[in-house]
Image 1 (spheres, rainbow, N blue to C red):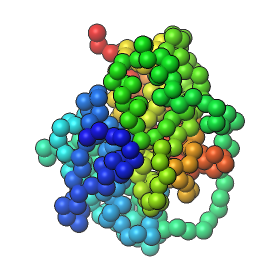
Image 2: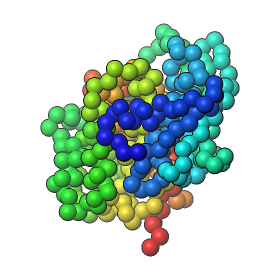
Image 3: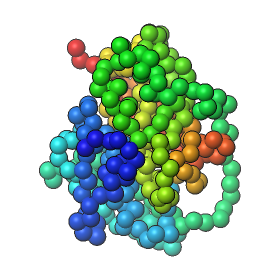
Length: 287
């Protein structure tokens, strides 16, 4: 399955309902031949959301990637209804291929409630206007970029604009910080729950690779093996994924063959809408 617009992504994460608690998902045919982590995050959140009463919104999810998914085999999502309380609902989702678990996730949902409110400030970075998109950058450096990556970026349903300057001719190592703006190419008339699922999909982009910046001499880390181990996400406030959002990422640590990265997602007005953390394997690629 290719990906030429946001409608195709929405179809991918909407899932086929097999029973009240079992769902079937297809795969984005990623050029790296493994199931994209953001896809299974979004599909699992979609499966869990379909088992919860409509007035409850996901506020946190904690997931583990167990095995690399095979993009040629559909994924079965089994949802366990752990608890429905007065304010919170908890679900556990296991994603399976050939009856073997490749991923699992716990999700907590919350009624909309009044409460205290504070947040950290958004980093002082340039806005998206005037920044080059990923696609513009790849066109500029097309001779240095594998065709698979060029095609991948061209068919993404989101536009990304990096704040930090990217050059494929710059071979210096970098500090583990990254900021970029993103939004869907098209305007969307969908539920807040679907905006959450789409954000969980995008949250896997450029996250763990931030942990490779001090260790790689190229924007495309061909010399480093990378694989996500776990992923956690908290949804703080309402947002729209068809308006510009800033992803501010840092990587506090890499050790023992693992890299750790975290990110905050802000609206253009500086409202903190979500926080993300991820750890994964990062080690020199075998020659």
